[in-house]
Length: 247
Image 1 (cartoon, rainbow, N blue to C red):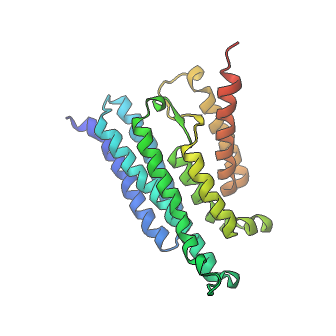
Image 2: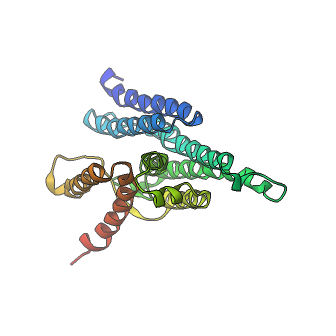
Image 3: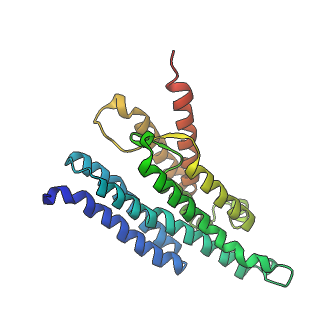
C-alpha cells in the first residue's frame, strides 16, 4: 500500500496518542489539559475519515483502528474524568465522608465508568450497523466525550453559582452518567458532520449547525458545549421528523 494511503491511519494514531496523553492528565486531575487533548484527538478523528475518502484509502483495518482510537480518547478518558470528579467530591465534602452507614458511597465514583462501557458498546455496534454509513444512530462518542469533559471546565469558569452547585452535586453527576449511556445507544438518528461533498445543498444542515455553534461558543464559552450537544440532538430530530418529512 502506498504512503499516501497510510496517511489516514497516521492521523488515527495521532488521535490515539492525544487520547493517551489526555488519560494521564485525567488521572492526575488536570482537567484543562485533558479537555484540550481530547479536543485535539476529536480534531484528528474528523480528518482521518476525510483523508481516507479523498485518497480512496478506506479499509476495514482503518475502520477498526478508528474505533479503537476513539475508545481511548472518547470512551476511556471521559469515564476517568467522571470517576475523578466523583472521587474529588467524596473527599472534599464532609457530607459524603464514609461512615459505617454510608460505606456504599465508596462505589459511587466507579459509576463514572458506565460512560466507558456504554462508549465501547456504541463503537462496536457502529462498526456492524449498516444504517450508520452516512449518519449516526445515537450520540457519537466524540460528542458525548465533549459533553462530559465540559463539566469540570464549566465549574472552573464559575460563571453562575447556582449552576456550579448543580454540576458539583454527585447525584446530578451520577444521573448524567446514565443519561450519557442512554444517549450513546438510543435509537435516535443524528446527522453526521463529516463533509463528503463540497455542495451547499448537501451540507446546509451542517453549515447551519456549525454557525450556530460558533456563536454559542463565542457567547457562553465552555457552557456552550452542553447547549450545542442538546441543539445537535434537537436539530437532528427536527430534520428527521419535519424537514425531511415527505410532502
